[in-house]
Length: 478
Ligand code: NAD
Image 1 (tube, rainbow, N blue to C red):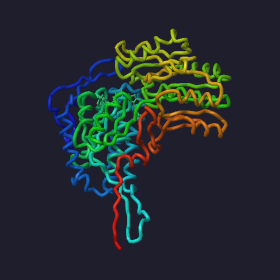
Image 2: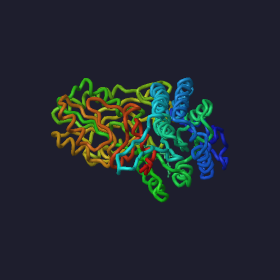
Image 3: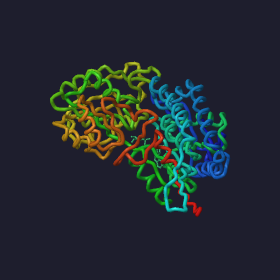
Image 4: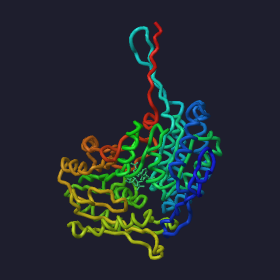
């Protein structure tokens, strides 16, 4: 689809240039998208402004806005097959994951549909003779920069919340994977979204993405992606005093105490690192284990990792391909450094023999004895690589858990309730799971980071506050 989507129409890019889209399962080009630039972003921002400021979108009652979001949710479910198949091919997601993502984006719009008419302000007791009330108002036009790892899900959580709060949106998806989002924007137009409420401009990050971050006429920017680019976005927005939500990377610890129920913990620990081939911001990529059960946990996790099969998305195996060649090089670079770092490879899964040679396949790998300050323990690998290390006691577990620049999610496994809560309070992260682990958890759960994992919250009702501005109105009635 070599067009943008602006004002409810497919629109050719102003340059006419395109970008090839590869299928990660075989490395072959299967589509092209428009290579957007600053002019395309400007057009989308103008369209959104016309919808937002006194336009058709802003005039809708919250109830009607909610009904449209609900219709979009239903349309997504009605096109579930088409959408998951697009996402599978575009991202290299195994069938089960692609289906789950298509279901999740519908669920985001369903959740936020019900929230539109429930975002209300307060009255505040003040000086006699005055009445004070607060209103949550939309920012106006919000910009959304989306990564390639979960295009539909992240679109749903970010754009769903922004639309529910009454904003009109300009979206710049990732150049690697954006086809499903163009289709969802078409569905929004079909179910009756007014022109300009939802606009999509495709293209490279340093071109269309940078143009969005720099664009006049945007009132808020939500960025999901790497910490490096998050800094660029925040700097650009700061020049115009535009608020920003940053959903960045993670190096999330899964912390296992000796009293943990290992039968429950081990499968969840493995899933938390292999889901989406490890290309998940909240992947549980560090395994911290109390020393007395360290070897036992390594053996149990290793046994499962060894059994994992990697192959093309359509084969729906345990793990699909990585998104592109340089991501595979990056993961293999980390693996090549293991032996000289003093760590050891405990187990690896296998790539099926009939996997296309040009696909971007990485073997799931468990690495033990990783030192706390090694790149494998500190840097986001963004692949199916789990770095394990022992800890002595609770205080040591907290120290190691907090020893990276990130703070997105953590998992704690213990049968001691007090310790679970103490750990949850002591670990610096946006979410903590005790005796379970969900990559970000359900739609209802506020999500976001601390430290270099970013700031602001998406998901849940909390997101609506970030996508709104509070206005205080003071009336003197005597
Ligand atoms: P990335 O930062 O390279 O790209 C993300 C998006 O930003 C893409 O749309 C890209 O085109 C755009 N972009 C790149 N350079 C830009 C620039 N100069 N100006 C404006 N936009 C630009 O990240 P990625 O490699 O696509 O995604 C992986 C990263 O995203 C990981 O760090 C991962 O942890 C993070 N992530 C975080 C969350 C979260 O919710 N916290 C969710 C998913 C991914």
